[in-house]
Structures are given as structure tokens and as C-alpha cells.
Image (tube, rainbow, N blue to C red; front, side, top):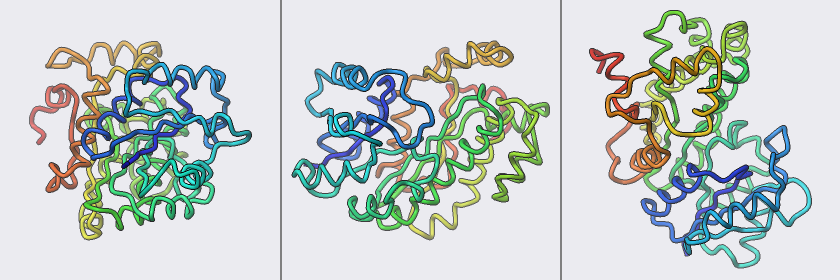
Amino acid sequence: MRTAILGGTFDPVHVGHLCMADEVLARLDYEQIRLVPARVPPHKQNAPAADATHRLRMLELAIRDRDEFVVDRFEIERDGISYTVKTLEHLIASGTLTGRPGLIIGEDLVSGFGRWRDADRVAELAEGRLDGLVSGAGLGPYAEPEAVIRVNYFGALAVLEDLRPLLEKGSQPAAVAISSIGAIFAEVAPEQAVPDCLEACLAGDEEGAVEAIRGRSGNDAYCVAKRALALKVRAGVMDWGEAGIRLNALAPGTTDTPMLEEIYRTEGIGEAVRSMPIPIGRSASAEDLASVVCFLLGPDARFVHGAVIHADGGSGALVRPNVI
């Protein structure tokens, strides 16, 4: 049975988790999604807000009517930090997994796959290759600006670069970086542009970029980071194409997520985001964006490369009607 693994804290499980898993199941020919809640995640500084048993129960309730979804208790019931390599070794040794497993990985990789524990062993257990990758690092525009630059640009880029060797060995491999409609505001709103930071990002100078953004708002940092990521995708079109990997970016607009709820509560940006017009009359759902991501990863997009797809309900076109 072709199985893909989705790990995380699930604190709590939400529609974004399930929609992405659904799309992977439907479009990438997997037969089962194995959800693995972490007891103690190695990559997050703070402990999960909910107790492990509560997170496990919420996840079980969320998929109770879905036979193709399975909750795995291994990490929850195991003492100590939850490492993917240990989970894969257990699932393979127990006969739970047969054949090459899929790994659904996104923003939890912001520190870079190369810095995972036993990253080479993880790659080996996945038979040393990946067919698709989504780099979805996303601190909100309410976070500290220095952290936003480090995570949303340099972290997202590290995901792509660290996993590229595995993609090169994959079958019709493709990668998607998650940008944002905020990327256009670093261009059209002079007060939000921080050209020195953008230049440092594109030059690979992380400390220079952090220094350039110091004293600015988290929103300014968010827009710069997302713009730099989109530009980096376009700049890499020949390099990635020659390696046989399609690389594209998705720039979502206003989307119903916990991040949006926090943005609405944030003084200084909440009202501006609320007032941004959306020509089709509604914000996006997680399903809307998951469908675009899976299209870009799948065979129907086999000639799409170096594109920045704006899934924003028309907001970007309204702001920049003369930009193609």
C-alpha cells in the first residue's frame, strides 16, 4: 500500500492539515495517509499548548470517518524527543510500511532538512529520493522582523536547497515555494519597501538582511521575505530546470487560517488586511490553496516552471492591473 506520512504537533489539528493530506491522497496516487503526532517536537522551542493525549484524541476525532487516514501512536507513546528517523525505522521494521514511503513536509523543515537528526538516514529510508516538495515557512507579519526574515526567506530557501539532491533523484520532481500577496506590497508601497534587506536576501547574506530589517515592522519583513522568495524562484529557473526539477511559487491572498485571525487582532495591520478588496467577494479556504499546490506538483503542470501563481481572488490584479 502506497503510504504518505504527515507528522507534526497537531496543536491543534486543523483543516489545513486535512486538506493537504486529502489532495496528496487524491492527486499523487497514495492509498493511505499516516498521521503521526509528535510527543516532543525537536524543532519547536516551546512545548505544545495541548497535552499529548488531548492532541492525539483531537486527531482521532478529526479523521473518524476517513478509512484512508490512520493515526499512528508511536511518537506519542515513546518517551523523549520525536525524531522522524526513529519513526521511519520503527514503521519499516514492524512491517507497517512496505515500499517507499512518502513524506509530507513543509514549514516544519524551516531549519533545513540537512540539520535534521540523521538526515542522511531519513533520506535512505525514503529510498533516497523525493518526487515533490512544498516549502511553506510562514511566520506571520505580527512576529519579530528579524525572525520573519530568517524563517520566511532563509528557512524556506534552506528547505529547497537541502532537499534538492533528493528531488533530483525523484520521478518527474517538482517543488513549490509559498510566497504571498504581500510580495507585491514590497514593490507598490514605498513605505514597506526595504531595498537593502531585499538585496541582502537575494545575495544570500542572512546577517546583512537581518541587520537591514532591524527597527522595521514585522509586516515590512514579511513582505520583503515573500518577495525575495518569489524572485529567487524565478531566478533559479535555468539551474533547477537543467536539474530536471520544476520549481514554482504560490502567492496566496487573504486566506482563512489561524494566521489570518491573528493578523486581524494585530493593531496596525489588521484593519488594512480586512479592507483589502477581493474581487471574487470572499477569502480563500485551505482547500483552495491545497488544490493549486497539488496541481503544481502533479503531472498536469508538467510544463509549468518558474511561475509565480497568484491565488488571491483577483486582489493582485486590482492593485497592479498593468503588470503581467
